[in-house]
Amino acid sequence: MQKGDFVYISYVGRIKESGEIFDVTSEEIARKEGVYNPEVKYGDVPVIVGAGFVIPGLDEALEKMSVGEKRIVEIEPKKAFGERREDLIKLIPESEFKKQNVDVKVGDFVSVNGIAGRVLSINAGRVRVDFNHPLAGKALIYEVEIKKQVTDTKEKIYAILKYFSNLDESIASVKIDGETAEIETKDIQLAARVKENIIGTIFQWIKEIKKVKFSEVYEKSEKSKS
Amino acid sequence: MQKGDFVYISYVGRIKESGEIFDVTSEEIARKEGVYNPEVKYGDVPVIVGAGFVIPGLDEALEKMSVGEKRIVEIEPKKAFGERREDLIKLIPESEFKKQNVDVKVGDFVSVNGIAGRVLSINAGRVRVDFNHPLAGKALIYEVEIKKQVTDTKEKIYAILKYFSNLDESIASVKIDGETAEIETKDIQLAARVKENIIGTIFQWIKEIKKVKFSEVYEKSEKSKS
Image 1 (tube, each protein chain N blue to C red):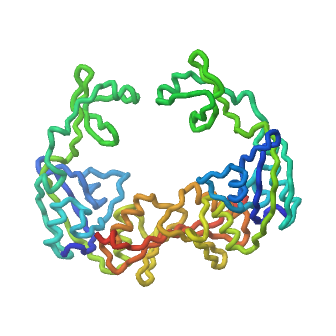
Image 2: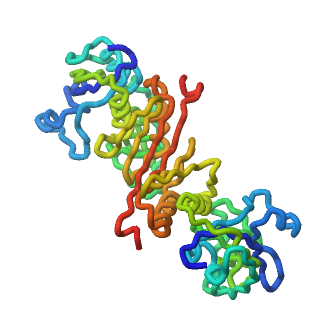
């Protein structure tokens, strides 16, 4: 593939050391492997090759693959979720958590100033929290397949919508009119941040589109007549 | 006029007792009377008669007036900003303000749980705050004129946009297509709350519109190519 190609991929991601699955796109495999999570929306994942939609090591592998090809790719930590950094382990007074009425126990995931960390130990009122990504320092093994490529402008926009907001054709409809892409949703409003990401990605990776129009349609119901 | 008519009005609102102007729509009069505020957007104000866009006493007066007519209307407190209520004067420990690093002085306007109040006195660490509307208990005198009526659907929607978001035709454009009104803005996103108000008001007061479409258009600039 080439940088900028729009593809849908499926994968099983495992931690090399333990063989544990940490991410999988297929519901069937998730169930079979006993890692099914009802809150996850399974299915092939849209990726713009080389655009940072996936970790660097996987992005590089995709560039060397073709549509329909399946590979097993080993990825070293620095091309996955980074090396573990000792300076990301912090000591926090237990009183900080008490102030927020949070009861901490070893192993808990906590959020401090919006950053997630895991409690390693609690001693003499001091809590050691590890703010490294849970997969930092781990070599990973991906079994990845490029299921299909999309080249149609409208399909590319659906791929971007799916990536940033999990919207599919049942919720959002896309119309292309010359250099304008109209993205229409019913009764829902995308967050400003999500729109920014969608717009930025469209302008960067779909050269033929120079204008993006977000439309939200609201219909009068019997209720709103009162 | 009749309930549901869309009009633009101008007014000068005075406190009866003191003659003080508390609200005025004309920049010229504001300057002449020495109450000009550079942060206020002056100009005629859109009103749907009887829809609560203005205080009840003024709404009632508008129903009795015709387009082009000017009246001086005296409004008693209960049809203006309500009677003063002693139970809206609260004692708050000064420590509550100190906790938020707020230094209170007599006469200050403060915000407590999102409600604005005025500090009446501070004694022995207790702050007396008056949460009555500053115009509660006041009789008012409005000099009001109905400048024009709008009957065109599109103009009615512009009136609603102006009322809820101060958007005018330079920022928002309205298109009517059958029973659908499309409201298009460039590079800006209306808050969800504002949209709800606009939609609700359109469906309630413009019977011919059954569908509202909000569109935001974003154009690619040289910057967004990077």
